[in-house]
Image (tube, rainbow, N blue to C red; front, side, top):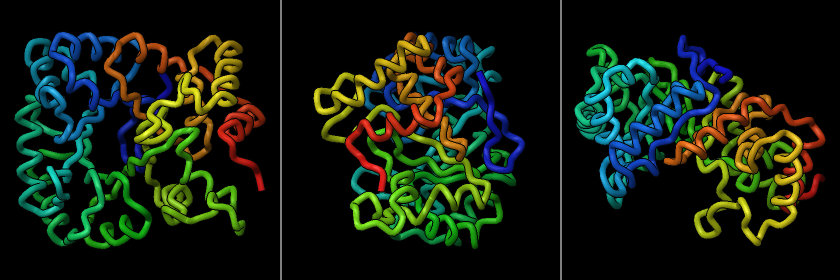
Length: 306
């Protein structure tokens, strides 16, 4: 598995991360098999959030596995997120501190390698966040920090107060949900794709040494769900099938390879709880799509170049 550097830090991690959201619908036995498969294929980065709790909190299941199999503890760089509550967002000092302590307890860890603020909080007070980050870093509970689903203006505002570099911004990105890429192609056009929805995030991230992480990498949207084999995307699926056959991988692996082919060095989050699917997705790092293939996939979603 190829590795990338997170931001300008000393963290070198697998090019693909294992997302733990769906694992919260499983049990500790399934979690253990998934983590073992991750180690086997070279994935050393896991992405949690305090809100991932369909059946049991994913962090708690992770902690159960770490407790009964301590050898796995040092195999992973652990990222988790906080700030989403039931019905509101909370980036207050009190909530951040409480969330981190809960996450550490659930996962049976002494420190979190990377903490992200999960969603932009309209009531965000950067001074409070800076205070929380300083105390968490000084205590050794959190090593590095980042954000999720934020635009350049929000990141810049926060970075003005926070002395720690914000290493990561995790955003939704797939071949179909490609807003962060569209606006850079449709510059100065009247098309809907030209609408600047995120303030040129890819360019901002590159300028400020921020690693973009992609979530929902095979999703079209909340209503349509996964685009793999979806009847609404026949042309895309045919192109995925052709390339999957060429490179001897699955359609999902091609979808992940499409993200990684972008020179922004974007890190896909493999949001699967199935060890077999994880192994299949991991093979995406061996695929180097050509420039024409990348554009053919992009255009197969119905977009047109200006």
